[in-house]
Image (cartoon, rainbow, N blue to C red; front, side, top):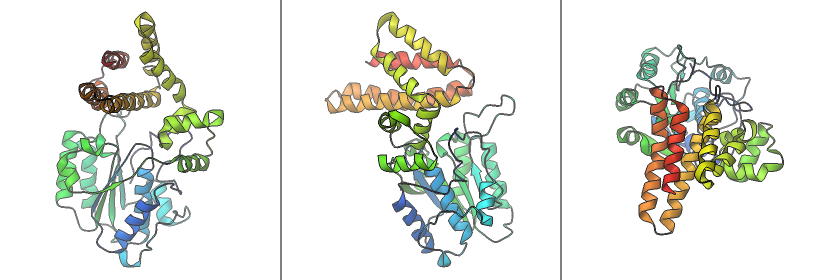
Length: 342
């Protein structure tokens, strides 16, 4: 049973269908060997930047576990999933009775993805575990990402983590684990993934048959080791958005105001959700880089102000979506705050 596949980027493959993973061999070996030992943790927090393969790793490991339900008989390495195997076909189709993928649902009234994973989604996990597993196999829940759990949903997940059912496994994904409830983090085994090196990112893009073109070096530099960011840069006009943001931050006076409104118009247009997501992540990273620069130069007050704003970006945007606030005005407000910090 899988979450709705509403957020697969043009040019990407859903993690449940992806057969190759680049750059995380050590993490794969750790998971395989931990499982084989029979002493693996029931909840694993897979953390790291967005778009580097956390969900793909989670589905690969789920495939491995469901294909080898007896840990003692499992290989000590994760093999590429066999698309022809029954387990792989079920997982790829979102039809596995032993796997539940929790992610943000679509609002039936608006047709847009909700701002958070709600407690109603988490209740699906309760029903999922309450069902008798017909094969006696493991039952695995992938929370993708746990950062999107609202407070009630997080507390509901916590209750299950505190008393997990037998042969239950949680793969908890997080782009920013510091924002999770400390009690959730304390009940998970952390597994940190790093951003992809340029060579691994090139291989991942090649596997997707994505050609960065003549701007390949610039794409790699701005992607920050993230496949999803590279896709947005190449297929969604992300390079133009990144350049427009730089223009806004470099401009002053009426020119800055005009550039700000022009950028906000693009990002608040219909069907601009992907670009809007790219922009917010890029803005957050830009402000955080300024915080680091200020800290290195010894201006700790400026570093703290920038760091506070960087951590505030996603929350302000989440609230704006939750309360259906004007997206354009929210973007302009954020840009004004960034420029005010200098």
